[in-house]
Amino acid sequence: MTQLVELQTALPKFKQAGMKLYGISYDEPAALAEFARHHGITWPLLSDRGSKVIRRFGILNHHVTKEQIPYYGIPFPGTYIVDEEGIITEKLFSRNLAARSSPELMIDSALGEILLGGDEPTTTGGNDDIQISATFHGGGGTIKNSVVRQLIVRFELSEGLHIYDAPVPEGMVSTRIDVTGPEGVRTGDILKQPTRPLTLPGLGVELNVWEGRVDFAMPIWIDDRIAGITREHAMDEVPLTVTVHYQACDDHACRIPQQETLTLSVPVGNYVGHKLAGRLSGASASSMNTRKYLTRMVWRGLLRSPIKGLLYLKNSLTAVRNGPSGRR
Image 1 (spheres, rainbow, N blue to C red):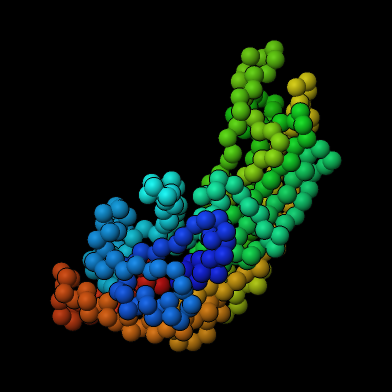
Image 2 (image 1 turned 60 degrees about the horizontal axis):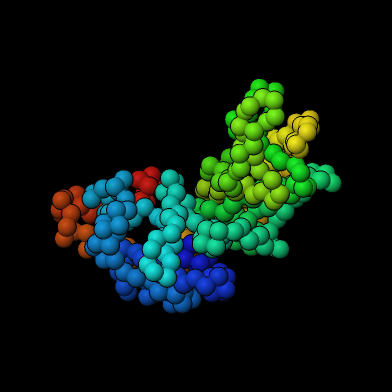
């Protein structure tokens, strides 16, 4: 839900980038229509009832079994970026089933360029000829449960300077970025720009280096330990510590290895959740009647379920209570 609402909010950015949005879901048309009406979704939401398209794309979530009614049939969440000729140019899928790509990640991937916003939390360091910044990129600078943003560490190197990718000879330091935060902060593998080869004079060793402006993008999101739907005390901000290790060299000599520590404080935004009883400290409840459509999906599942009768209903209630991940 949160991702769909965020995509709607970012619709002007997609239009400016020349991109159109389409969503495919295993939910029935009436549920999608009501969700769009309640949340002001103006781009097409397409119903893949029976998960036929999901199966053809090979993204059926095989971790969700037929007994996990009504969630059986959901896909692995992800995004395909398709060009004007219908060719898939990029696939954005996460190994974490609860993580969803942010609008900015989609746009950056399509354009091949990281477009930082002026409203995003940023901190800077470095010196006169090596400037380093850390920016929390996406969502207007807010972090939300299960929505993948990016932490962008940007180097601005003066002409003639370069930094190294791993591996490097003993005694030298390759560029490394470590991010720490409270429990519940999740990070993925850093995405790096292409390097160029450089052979060190006298050593005959070819190394990989970066020059000029260099961006390192780390996927980052939070789970329900920080912004859980029923947390009594959800965090208002998430402190992040970014530690950058690097060594800069020119064509004649290398400088002393450096360690730069940057700190960010990122506001936590509410995500959109199902309409449940009780206080929703980490989420804004959807205004639509989600219970009605969950019930319809349970009865629809009765027709194709391998189990019947009271056992089916018991398992269905357990599955709804535990969610698609299989745990509460």
